[in-house]
Structures are given as structure tokens and as C-alpha cells.
Image (cartoon, rainbow, N blue to C red; front, side, top):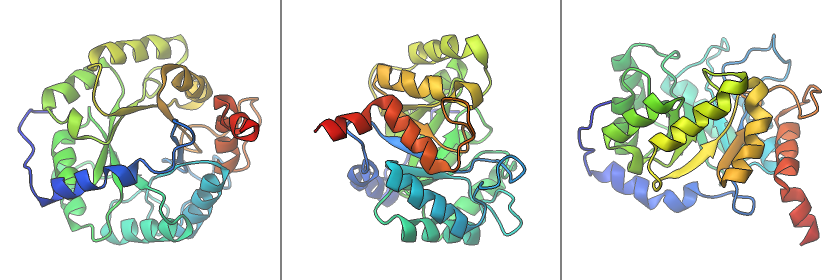
Length: 274
């Protein structure tokens, strides 16, 4: 990622005006984002939402369970991941219809459209815009994708997998323009390596800046939800990150995962006590 300055155009002004909206949905001072599908398939779980209608249902149920924001991987008619404008519009319109006022973000992972110029062209062609989009900062073209999203008035979640990614984000000069930084130490590391990787990421990032959201994947999902509470970070849970509840039983849907996260964070208990 290079450090070219971000143009301060109308899109950047629109983005700044939407900061308050994108902070909607917090439970106490913790945001639980529901990542409702990821790249998963029905072979992994029969309720992985692929169609806009299914995504809307899972998003609605997750919000009812306590999620304050939604993260979704857009799919086409065949169920494959997509950044095509019509697919993005169908997904966003369905989820927003089911969850009015709740911020909805999508993935721009490079595996969806590997050619950078094609990825940028598709983002330029979006007629219905997400509230935010996630960008993995280590991927080819990440800085260009971030700049384009910001220019279009779309918030950015900067996904940082390791200290090298954290340094790249800082060198780009774009960190302060992002909505939040996704701390993702379990994406390429597992087991005992996750916590040391997180600590290296934290050391590489400055002490101030955008809010941070910590989440895991697979075996690290639930330990990192708990650690997020201890660190004062926002967090995320959903079928993208795990298919099982903290006790190892299979989750019926995203709502069950969100309810379990609330219990781990102590939110439900505090609300009842209040």
C-alpha cells in the first residue's frame, strides 16, 4: 500500500457526515457485528444464507438477537461470491428491508474478483452502496480499493491479519480515514499462535485512531470474543467465523451465535439487571 494522499472530494465529505449513523446499534459500549455467511457453502451448514431473501432473514434474526451491524458476502444466482452491481443491490435492498436503520457492510476480498482493475470497475459501477466494506490490507490493490470506497462515501473496515499488514496500513496514510480496523489474528494463524500474533498487530498499530473490532475464525472465534471484551474492542460473530456455540454444539443460525456472544460479554445479564 502506498502513501498517496486521499482526495478530499464530495464522497469524503459524505463519509464524514455518516460517521454517527455507522456507529448505530451498540449494546452498551460494545458493537456485536453479525458476519452471516462468509465464503461458506451449504455443504458446511444447511442454513448458510446465499440468496438475498435468506440473507435478509438471517440478518433480521441476528439483529433481533442483539447484533448492531451486518457483514455479508454477496452472492450471485449460482451462490458464488460476487461484486456485480445487480447482486450487490439485491443483497443490500433485501437486508435493509428486513433491518431498517442497521448498517450493512460487504466483503471486497480479492479472491472474489482477483484482477484489481476489474474489482475497482465493479465498485465504481455500484448503484446501491453499502454502509461500509471490508478490505484486507495485505491484498493487491488494497490502497486503491480503500481510496475508491472513501471517495464514493462508503466506510472502510481495514482487515489486518498480521503486523506486516498493520505497518502497511500505517504507511498508506489511510488508517485514520477508515471506519474501523478489523483485528484478524486467526486468519492465517491457529492455536497458540493467535494471541502472540494479535499482540504483534497491537504493537504495530498506533495507540489512537479508528475503533477496533477483534474477531477470530474457527477455534479462535469464541476466545477472541471474550478477549475483545477484556481489551475494550468491538467484536463479531456469525456463520462466517464459526458454526458452533461455545459449548461445541452446532448453532441453528446466526441469531444463536449472537445470543451466545451477548452472554459471553455479559450484556444480557446487565440489561436484565437494569
